[in-house]
Image (cartoon, rainbow, N blue to C red):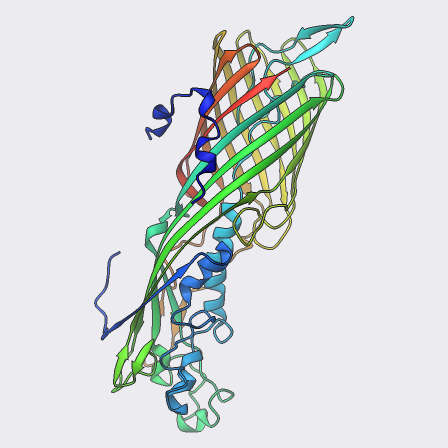
Length: 468
C-alpha cells in the first residue's frame, strides 16, 4: 500500500496514541483443491470481481473443469450453468457485492466547510461573531466574513469491518444452477414427463456453489480545503481529496453435488475424480485524486443568540470508480444550518437532502444535532449525532431466496447479508486545539451507532486549519 500519506501530518504534534485506543467450514464432498492467486494489476473493482473467477477464465462462476476443452461435449455444457448470464440471481448477487462495496467505500464523510473564528465588519472594523473555532463534521451558520479565509488539511482513515452488520471476513454467498428448459435442453419435457420447467429437474439442478469471502478493505483520505469569504454573508469553499485504497481478499468456493453416481459440475479433474473446491486470493492498492467538492454557504440571518444559513454542496465524479477512489457519479447537498450561542456553548442543527446520481447508491435525508464547547481559550470539544436516512428502496438489490420444487420443496438462503435499509447513524467526538495564533489542530473519531451500510468500527480524523 502507498505509504506517502502516513507521514503527511508529522508537524501537528497530535496525541495519536489516544486515537489508536480504539468460518465455519461445513463438511463437503471434496476430493482436491484448486488454488489461484491474482495480483493487483487491474482496477480494484475488477480485482474484487475476480474473487469469483477460478482458473484462467475471465467469466465469473465459470467452471473450468466441467467446461474445459478436454472434456467430452456432454460434459462441457455444464461449465456455463452458474455464470451470471445464465442465472439472473447469481448476477444480482455478484453485482450487489461489487457495486455495494465500490459505491460505499468512496463515500468518506466531508469535514466542515470552514473553521476558525468568524467575523463581520462594523464601520470597517472586524468584529468576532464566534468564540469557538467551529464543529468538525457538522456545519455552523456563521460565515467567515468578507475577505477572510481558512485553509486546512485533514486525514481520515477507515478500515471497513462489516456490511449491514455482517463481518467482512465472514461473507457467505450461495450460487444456484440454471433452470434447464426445453430451450436449453431440446426434448427435456418429453424426457421428464412435462416437469422440465420445475427447478430441481434434472437432479443436477440441485447442485450449488457455496462461496465464503474474507475481505480486508482500507481507505485513507487526505483532504486539502480552502474557504474564502466573498461577502459578509457568503463563503465559497473547495475541497481536494487524495485517496489511497487497499484491498486484500480471499474466496473459498465449494460445489455441493446433490447426488448421483458422478459429478456434473467441478472446477478441475473428471466426472469420476472431480475437484469440488477452489480458492482465490487477491491483493492490490490504488491512489489518486478523489471526488472534488465545491460549497457555497449563504448566511440568511443572524442575531446575538443565533444564526441561520443555507449550504449548497456539489461533489464531482473526479475520482476513479474502478479503483474505488470515487463514486463515479455526481452528488449534491442542500442543508439548512441553525446555530446558537450561549457564551462558550454553541449548539447547532443541520437538516437537508443529499442527491446521488447513478444507479448504485440512494439519495438520503440528512440530519445532524450537536454542539461545540470552548472549554479553555486553547481547547474546544465538538460532539455530534450525524444521521443519513436513505430515500426509497435499495438501488443495489439482493436477490430473493430460491425455492426448489423437486425432488422435494425446500428454500435455499443465498447469503448471510440481510436485505435491510442502509441508514447511517454515527456519533462524532472531537477536539480542536489552538497550537499557534489562528492555527488549530484537529482530532476526531466517528463511531457507528447502527448497522446499515458498509461500516468501520472506528473512523478517525486528524488535521490542521489556519484562519486568516
